[in-house]
Image (cartoon, rainbow, N blue to C red; front, side, top):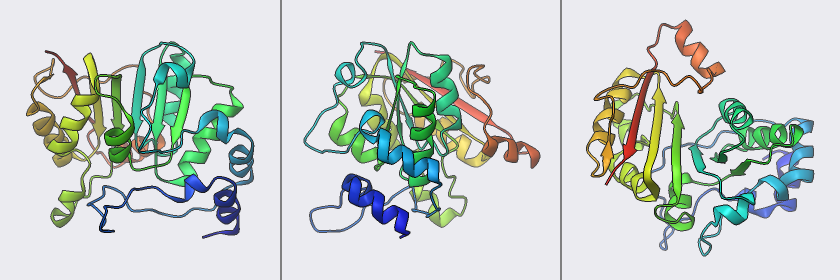
Length: 247
């Protein structure tokens, strides 16, 4: 742990914890492994000065009231694993009529998006640093979310690690339970075999409908990310999956 992290964790103790352990202390299978990266001065400054404005703290005893959180009744989209927040920032900037809650365990990306949102004075972004599965289970009401974005989740390419992949049926069912009628789940990956898994898993959940019958065409409002550009340079295929909740 860097000295900067120690200082930030002392200031905001909630940032030091990214998951809720089971009662016996065991750790559930996770789709992430924490990686450290030294924070830059502007990120530290943002955490010191804008945390209360943009950050949502995990509390298993609290259900999120999105209208109160954002100060309006606009639609709410949750992005899971936003990385550096490049896409999140641009989408929120270009769609002020939608509220965005980004969930990311990596402190570097969390603080970068927080800093950039504060710099642009965006009012429709909130960020959380916690395990997204537990946030959804504990804090998000059923039928309260208009959409989910899952862009380029870790593909865990080795077969023995496939159990760590985020898009599994129990998680897909959890997402579906949190969606409003007509809400959507939008996943993107450059790992072809994982794309097939996404298509199969999301297509197997009751109440979710794929309007395209297969992979979706590119959505024009999703910006290309640096990570995506690296994949394209290696001739990876970008596959998109879009499903909607219908009764």
